[in-house]
Image (tube, rainbow, N blue to C red):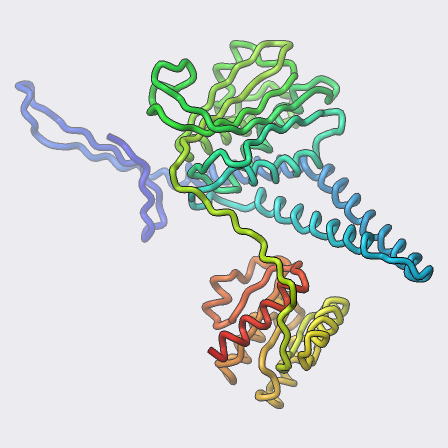
Length: 428
């Protein structure tokens, strides 16, 4: 028997094997245990894994820039149209709605990029794959040439699997990028299907090492040049590639194979030269269903009359927070510097009921401001906002004593609900 074991206290990874030893008469004598330190090997694998992701992000960069430019064009264009229509006394509701939708597109695109580029493996949990695959395909649509037609057949409620969103993103990006490289002159059809399937022992599809039952099939099919039989035997091997130097590392399909194995699934590949390739991935379905979180529609924003200290080094954001909160009835004091905000607070610690602060600011960050403030007034609720920070997470924020951790950008409703939530929690 053999296994891979992580020794946390030593920060080492070992390949451990043991085997019984018998005498010539067949009697058990003793057991041999062998432990091989493979820490450096695992570290190299992780570095190669991350390097390949960065290579894939390089492929996506052009498409991402294209998508962002389209989003910015919509926001700038509609803003100018709003100005003209207001001057003419016309209704601008439709244009403002378009600006909001464009902003949300940008928000989701950033989320997709961060999800894909996240370093290391994540915990495997029950996951409904269809929303994640749709998001990943949006990212691919932005990066693939428009000459590639993408056909989606995604079953909206095909069940759950054991996986994490990052891994599913990587499977889609790797297989779709591979399909692009196989299509001559970047023209062809890319088909992605997701649906449940019942596999039995007598099915040709079911791998002999897997039990019969309900699986979720992810199929990625292209109309490219296909894979010859000799290459087909090696496509999942690390560093195996038929591409020119600089066109790929040969790690893409090896990583896909490793991810699928980690998720407890298996892959089948069918290909014919000149007629394209079909990759079929089968994930074991699980009974536990994931409840979709429904967006709560708030008919009326919660209001209040408490005193709020708002801190952010971006003037435009401070003004937006101030006007929104004042319209809701709050008394708002603003500062563009964590240093100045701390001075004002220290002069009169009881002058505020809640603090809303950005994280990334020069000289004094939001988390540093919070730590100083909480030493004086441990009871004051603090809302920490950030667009992205490698230095602070929701868990670290809670350890400091911060009442709420919020990711930018967020809506007026999110802002109003967050402020009311921490104030009501303090009262309770």
